[in-house]
Length: 249
Image (cartoon, rainbow, N blue to C red; front, side, top):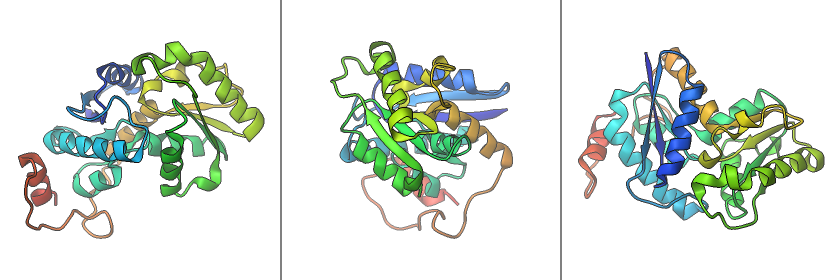
């Protein structure tokens, strides 16, 4: 049995339910998934500072719960805190962006990202750059109106999201559409056949890649840039994070 922990670094329980539903649909028989919601933070991340808060929330939950799981997923597009968690945790870690981009690169050369807001695009672009894939990014397009309910984006804005995806193909030359963010979990599945190019979803991609990584049993880095953080004095940290800093070897 493979056990995967998906951490929603935002406080939106409705989004966690979307994550859970798509993760369960995507998981192979014998894989168990669990979704945890951040105990503090914002409803959804759009900015670098909000990502900083979400990263710490994800670190806290990962420190408290990782021992029961074979792999951990940062279940927010932009992957807040992912590189640091990869240093500290003994199990494989991936995120919605990393997994979705990996899937997209296996399906076409140039991909476009369809996002839930305009403000979020700068942070997403920087995330793509951090993965060395800016040369394959055709465009990032986002909704341009306030969101009434983050858990209802698919229902409220579904046709606008489809129109944005179609423009990415027709005007930007996208070979693959990445439907970005946990609030869009499952949308790629529901749009199957509607778009003229393949579309991928971060949650389903992350679950499948996490299953693969767990099955490969690649081991934990003991040297190099993803070796565990060195032991040093610390102050004001939770017992779980203190334990992770002192014992992740």
